[in-house]
Image (cartoon, rainbow, N blue to C red):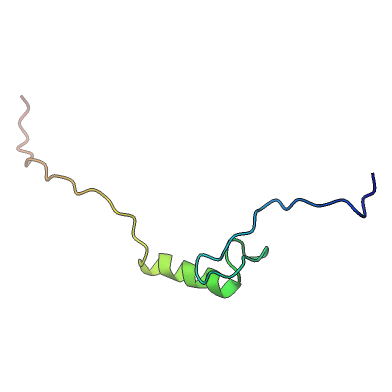
Amino acid sequence: MNAIGAKVTPLRSKRQCPECGNASDRASYPFCSPRCKAIDLNRWLSGSYVIPGTEEEPSAPDTGEEN
């Protein structure tokens, strides 16, 4: 087999950057640049991205007595 003409299949598929929509870069995948990567990290650290939780019902006050 001729290694010079062989087609190399990339390990990761091409994606758009989740921040700006440009083509992703191998060095900062899935982002297109270190800048977009830093913007996303800042949003996580500042609390802009929030995973919704469920509200728990308040439990009955503990009286210390057992049934």
